[in-house]
Length: 198
Image (cartoon, rainbow, N blue to C red; front, side):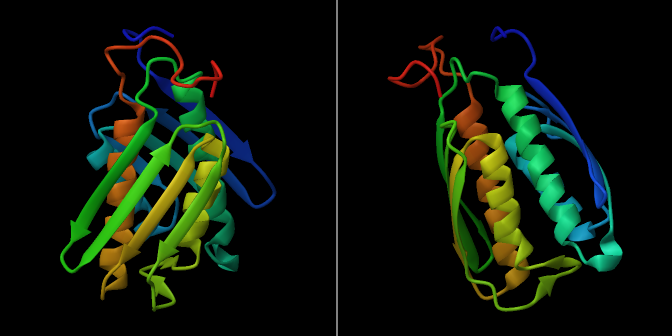
C-alpha cells in the first residue's frame, strides 16, 4: 500500500453469541456509523472516530439479554482486527502516540505503540457499576481486546470524580494517541523498527 492509497480495513466475526462487522478508515474525516446495541459504547466509538479523524462503521448484534460482555468484547476484537488490516505492515507510520485528554475534572493519558505485540495496561479510577448501559468492568476489557487483536501495546490511565467523564476522557485520549501513531512520517518509507518488521 502506498501513501497515496486510502488505508482501510474491513473485518467480520460471527459466533453463537454475536455478529459483528467493522470498517475502519485510518485517513478519514471523523465520520461514524455505529450500532452495537450498547448506547454508551456507540457514543464512545463515535468519539474515537471524531477525535482521531477516523471513519468507523460498526454493526453489531449480540445476546444483550445476557449482559453487555459478549457484544463489547467481540466489537473490540473486530475493531482491532480491522485496525490491523488497515495499518498493514506499518511502513512509513510514526508508530508511537502519547496523548492526554481532559473532560472537566477528569484527565486521561493514552500511550500507543503499533508494535505488533498486542497487550494492554489499563488503570481507570471507576467507582460505579456502569456508565449508562456500558458496565465499567468492560471498559478496560474493551481496550485489552482491541490491543491484542490490533497488535498494539496500549497504556491508558485516567482518574477523576465522575465515571462518565473518566471513561470519555480515556476514549478521547486513546483516539488522539492512535491518530498520532498511525500518521505517516514524511521522512521514512520503511517499517519503523530495527527488526525490519513490527
